[in-house]
Amino acid sequence: MKKYILAVAGGGSTYTPGIIRSLMDRLEDLPLSEIRFYDIDGARQSKVVVAAKAVIAEYTDSILVTDTTDPQTAFENADFVFAQMRVGKYALRELDEKIPLSHNVVGQETCGPGGLAYGLRTIAPMIELIDYVEQYAKETAWIVNYSNPASIVAEGVRKLRPKARVLNICDMPVATMRNIAAILGVEREELVVDYFGLNHFGWFTRLEVDGIDRLAEVREHVYKHGLLTEDVSKIDYRHADSSWIKTFKNIKLIMDHFPEYLPNPYLQYYLFPDHIVETSNKDYTRANEVMDGREKTLFETVEKFEETGILEDSFAVGVHGTFIVDVTVSIAQNLGKRYVVMTENNGTIPNLPADAMIEVPAFITADGPKPEFVGDIPYFYKAMIEQQLASEKILVEAIIEGSYEKALQAFTLNKTLPSAKVAKAVLDDLIAANKDFWPTLNKEYTEGLLV
Ligand SMILES: NC(=O)c1ccc[n+]([C@@H]2O[C@H](COP(=O)([O-])OP(=O)(O)OC[C@H]3O[C@@H](n4cnc5c(N)ncnc54)[C@H](O)[C@@H]3O)[C@@H](O)[C@H]2O)c1
Ligand SMILES: O=P(O)(O)OC[C@H]1O[C@H](O[C@H]2[C@H](O)[C@@H](O)[C@@H](O)O[C@@H]2CO)[C@H](O)[C@@H](O)[C@@H]1O
Ligand SMILES: [Mn+2]
Image (cartoon, rainbow, N blue to C red; front, top):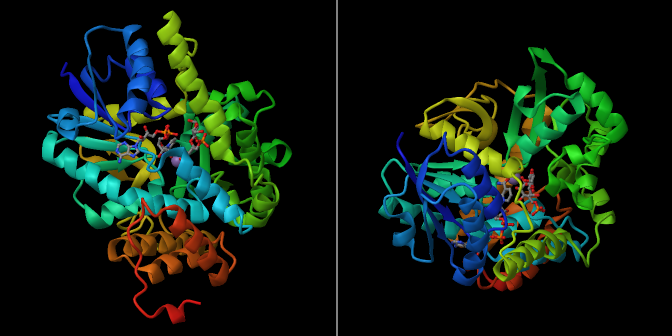
């Protein structure tokens, strides 16, 4: 069977060792001749590659591993590129979360103004990556992208590189399916879902097991327990964090108001921004938890391994690692397997704009995602999605045009912001914080009009 060359862009990611273990578990489905790690922070990446190499060594010595900051070395003749960049790293994520909270607005990694700020940082590096891959990799190469904010990245790629072979994915739907399966007492793979929305902004409309829709059963469970089993050990070990427990519990809050469909957990930030702000710690946000948790543990594990030769973290594979390998195998072998991914609408949901980058079940083939027809969606969801879509589309226009006014429009349209006045105050603080990362946003008219 053909062996593939894989490049990992953002090799210094905390998720790298888990993804590598998932790849090693699936070498029969996706044989690899080479894995090349690429990052702009070579020092960070080289430490993470120590752990990645230790995991690979448990399985094989036949894979050539390269650790590089050079795009040509990374992408020359590659078949697949996994992208998992965090532009600005956790330091900027912390500001994405704390600056909005200082204005009593939702502070979150990918939602609200934090997500918009993250998008303003990420589009240019994503386009740069696509251009590197198109310059050096095989013509048939696919970029399978986890880099967030995935919804804005997907719109930026659609607008700026419409022919690029990029599959934008998110592990939240599969993470939610994992919790649903645990609640129903079935395996995640037995679940067949219908789902529609944008990334981090969608709803499950059908939860089928053996041909029977079990949404009503899950709805009853959520009323009592949120989207959690009593025994949280059944969910991803990453979700044992208290903030993730809170996130999944809050699905009850959403369904107490809107029980029709099962929401993506991220909708809590848009539907209950007041509750989220009231229950946030403005001085210690999720970015701090991750820096003190996942990131710290990873680099301590590497340090211990270099001292003792013992790898103290198994880097067990969660849905994050499993999912990206599942979709890549489906591309490589042209399996047409059905997964929830991002893809251009083009009539899949007729009463949404054709050029919306929606998140729906699609059949994953060697030519990319083929979405399954959804049909018209009810007005409430259409209206919410169109508002969020407009915010994200106008943000991409702001990036391309360097337009302050369009950035302010995008912020003002976002459901987490209460007024244009607050939107402008948050935007101006984020501009100062992102001076090294954002495009210059010009005020097309005199300063006087933007008081
Ligand atoms: N789509 C999803 O559902 C999903 C799930 C989990 C994580 N993520 C995303 O995956 C990414 C990685 O997450 P993490 O917590 O491991 O981040 P991390 O900060 O640990 O690692 C990110 C790496 O990206 C590198 N990087 C930054 N800019 C780069 C560029 N221009 N080119 C190459 N490398 C660059 C950094 O140097 C760093 O090593 C983030 O964007 C995160 O939001 C997405
Ligand atoms: O706050 P973080 O950095 O822990 O997570 C932010 C990401 O959360 C989601 O990914 C989850 C995933 O759903 C879960 O199964 C497991 O793999 O952990 C991930 C990180 O906790 C979300 O889909 C991502 O877009 C976020 O970046
Ligand atoms: Mn996601």
